[in-house]
Length: 236
Image (cartoon, rainbow, N blue to C red):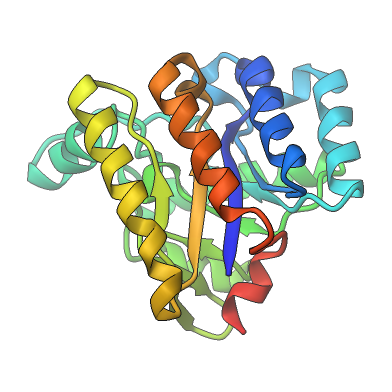
């Protein structure tokens, strides 16, 4: 089983998201859409009713929507954990790894409120860069959100169920990261052979690198005919 999603969905990445959607639709996939309420404080959904309507139409057509942080940018911090999350794992974008519980729950609630007020259905929550603190799963359970994920696993907070389901994605920041992530994504095609489901995670920035465009199109072609459009089916 293979699930496809597009991360960082916001007006900031309008053209890139539409390009990725076109690739997915060409192989018969309706990818999940990870929506950021105000990407880097540069693209608030609430200020762009045309884009909100675009997302509503995709949801009505069968695309699942997920809250994906709030700003997708971390707070300043110190310490080894902060360095790893913000400089090794991400380029300062592991937003929910930088929040303590009180602040994190405030932004979680703010994001949920915005999507509900904009009449955007929300299937679950995925933290930016897949990085989080231990308080997040209980917070999602209390709020009735029944899906989240990290790099290796998918979770159903309401039941406590966890499933191995690795993410295949590309890192575009440096040439070395592009090459290594492409190599891993190719190796990741072996997972389904041993009965392990995988997720293909597309990021808008990838479309600006011709090599990653080629790798993405190849990966989607490999997945054709073996995909699911619903995360719930990954738990079965």
